[in-house]
Length: 264
Ligand code: C5P
Image 1 (cartoon, rainbow, N blue to C red):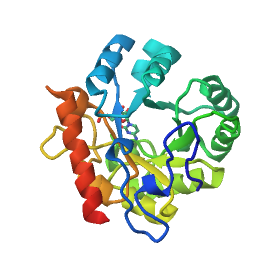
Image 2 (image 1 turned 90 degrees about the horizontal axis):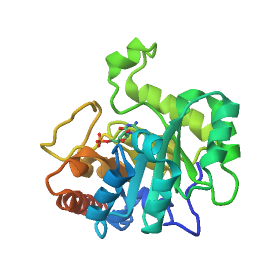
Image 3 (image 1 turned 135 degrees about the vertical axis):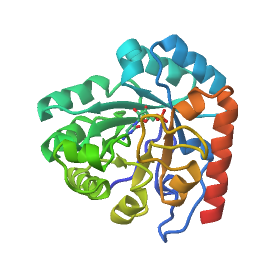
Image 4 (image 1 turned 90 degrees about the vertical axis):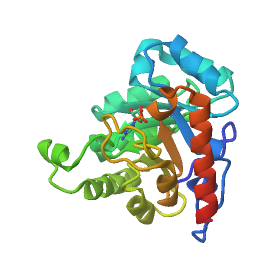
């Protein structure tokens, strides 16, 4: 699996993966390991949160709720403020349509874009091909949603354990040339072992000790996710719904920093 490296954005390489070529921890600025999910219904609400986190956080995730409401303009506004953007559109359609969607958003300035690994290898290859133009975002494949438990997976016809299904999809994405993966912190150690030290592994499903789980299922603390080999963590409500979002983010950044130190 390739690593991410573009001259116009932070270098997401083995350093960011958290392990050097010999498998040792190599600390990165914690701000390049935390992505705050801006799950808001309007650009105004999202930009207000970005303002509150300016100086603390570097990366924001624009997902379906915000993108369908505010489109490319909100990505551009975040970029103008100097933030990196993870565009989490979870593309999942026939290969031709996904390739077209990737081309449609390729120039908006996002650093990362998601597609569903479950769309299959042909779809993933079409996405990779479409994202090969200079300036395109790197592609991350979603494996199994962090909200799903084994019973829900079984109900949609997957009788394997979540980790077995995640590893199957990870292999598929790797074969298709995808840049990195999204998985839960509960599988990230197995995925890290499969993919090696340089893979970019992004984990949502992060809950600081004592935080409510909400609709998520396969969760872990920031420290555990880092210790298990996550490159970057996606955190939404534990920061954005906190009474003091900047303080909540700073606490998570501290936790990331100490987990890095302990595992280096
Ligand atoms: O608020 P919370 O921390 O649960 O937000 C997690 C974010 O990560 C949401 O924006 C969700 O869409 C996203 N996500 C996820 N599980 C995945 C992929 C993305 O929770 N497998």
